[in-house]
Image (tube, rainbow, N blue to C red; front, side):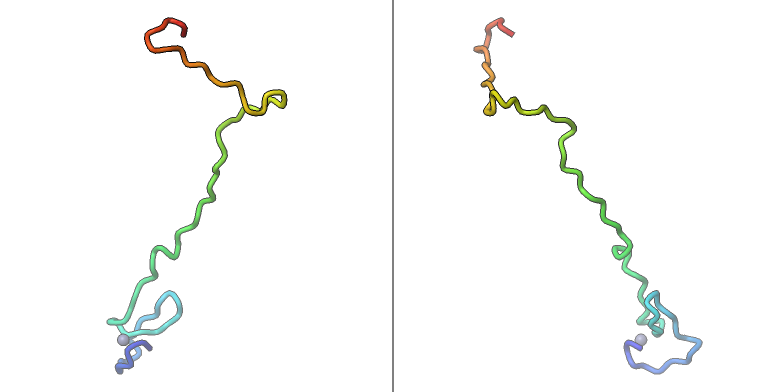
Length: 70
Ligand SMILES: [Zn+2]
């Protein structure tokens, strides 16, 4: 019972949680209750192992604009 008003038993409805309520108070289950989480996979698609002889990495040299060094 939610509102306390008097109803005949055949007018009452049963909710998903077992509560027996009047037609005015009747609520369907919140659809968001049924959503399942999906775990994240934050890993990168592939990776290159670090070179122990060069842990910082060799800087990339970008040729000046307009040069034909590429
Ligand atoms: Zn009610």
